Amino acid sequence: MIEDARTIPAGTVLKADLCIVGAGAAGIAMARALIGRPMRIILLEAGGDEYDDATQALYAGTREGNPCAPLDVSRLRYFGGTTNHWAGYCRPFDESDFERRAWVGMSGWPFDLDHLVPFYERAQPVLELQAFDYEAATWAEHMSGLFRSDVMQGRLRAAVFQQSPPTRLGPRYRDELAKARNVTVYQWANLTDIRTDRSPEAVSAIDVACLEGPHFRIEADRFVLAMGGIENARMLLSATSTHAAGLGNGHDMVGRCFMDHPHYEAAQILFNAPSDIARSPTGQIVYTQCMLDQAVEREEELLRFLTTLHPVSRQSPGYVALRNITKNLRRGIVPESLWDDLVQVVTDIDGAAMDLYGRLYADTNALELTIHPEQEPNRASRVTLTDERDALGLRRCRLDWRLTDLDRRTIRRGLEIVGEEFGRAGIGRLQLAPWVEEDGFEVPGNGSYHHIGTTRMSTDPKQGVVDADCRVHGLHNLYVAGSSVFPTAGFANPTLTIVALALRLADHLDTTTG
Image (cartoon, rainbow, N blue to C red):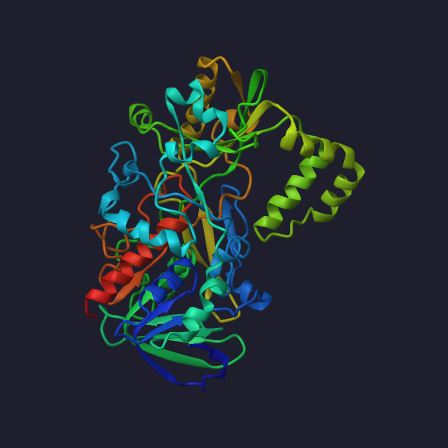
């Protein structure tokens, strides 16, 4: 059933076997997997079914380091979470993502790809995807001529992504959760404290508050934080009543190793002659995701590297403005430059139309390369708390997103290898964007909104926050779900892996006792 927490009498104590905090991709996937099981489940959602300004404002925070989107823009605080504005790109992690790589600090997962494959297979239908098959040969008829060219016969490989509709998990599974007899969803319910007052090694209860309404408490045998890669860390750091540094933070790891996928146009391939190589066999212009062969990454000691190659002929001011508008609106952002961009589109409508027409129908004379690489786990890249308080009295977040020398070397060298392979094939040459050639560059743009690593998984409490079962070190009944537990980020968008790990955790909770 689904209830409005604002109607709960103040001071009420609710009881459950399992309480999941956060109804986004991880929380909803877990709750669905446990429907009909012999346990009483409470699923908390901080918002309602629709966007609400006051609730969203609780996400506001400060930013330092590499440019990124405002913290109250890159995530959404209502039923379904950030799946309400995700793009739907899905791909599993590769085998090397799970391996320890000597040149990548703190790399390696507690299990390998084969262990996670059954959960990936179950995650596919949750996100309304096709069969679990990401082999390039399977999708050849949908791929551009680049897939069949000499470019992909050397150090480069095509990277296959499947496209979710994209599934908005809140609306998609609302009725199913509303009908579930053993699951109660409470909307407008904000976690404000995690209590360990009965024992420092167990969560006894959580405190919950509504912006306009009561404060109440939930007691459960086990608790799961599924609030996103920033908020999971924020709530652990905020719980200081019996743990001065916060829960799970005995080794100062909570909030550290924040990673995202830097995402920006970084280069162009200028063709030696006009070509239709960007078209599929059916004649459609196709974006091609290109990755380095994993053997090349090992040989050159690089991080995982992905770039999207898409046609570009020229950059009229009207088209640039139109692209800026659409890119931001797709992500749920109303850009400050909206009015100026609209004026630019109107005053250069011919240029915008010609560029758009050229991208749809013209032969290609250049390809633009948008990067989407892995980041190295880096303790200095982190989420901390400020002294500023939100409307619930909680300290707000500060995100300090940092790049390392290995991050920068991977971006620059990855682009160079792409250019070398196009040159070897006699197709064209690489032209780097000016920012890539700067020493100590930062990546422009807003990142990818992929908040990863802040409660990382490790069998060693000195290297992570949760163990291989996603249980917080030092607490026997508190777990974390979501991309915050990823030890490394790979280059794949995280949602498919978030759901796979959530289903894995649901199985663990279903087959063990609190």
